[in-house]
Length: 90
Image 1 (cartoon, one colour):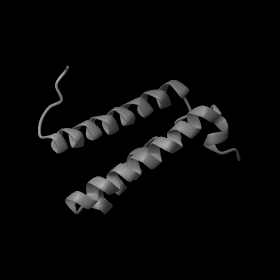
Image 2 (cartoon, helix red, strand yellow; image 1 turned 180 degrees about the vertical axis):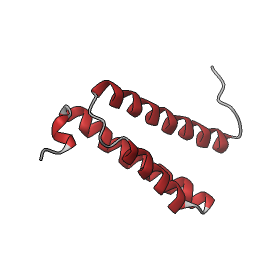
Image 3 (cartoon, one colour; image 1 turned 30 degrees about the horizontal axis):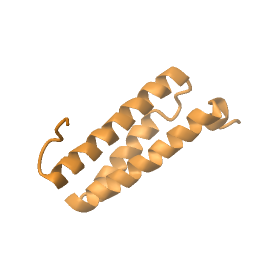
Image 4 (cartoon, helix red, strand yellow; image 1 turned 180 degrees about the horizontal axis):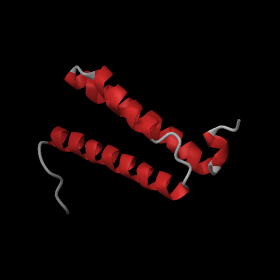
């Protein structure tokens, strides 16, 4: 039985795996700060498991974009906390 990775274009499968790992790293980072690591890691795993049988490349791209957007929003949020406010346009 072929794996789902074999059914997807190689670049898309690689991007999804890389995004999953980055989401797990970010969940562990946030969880460590807020003392709820296991909960956040499990939430990430559940989100990816929910869509693990998706084979439509367009749908996968949308899911991937949504997850990447959430990661970027969190990174910006953390950066704003570090500098003490919203980023301003120069």
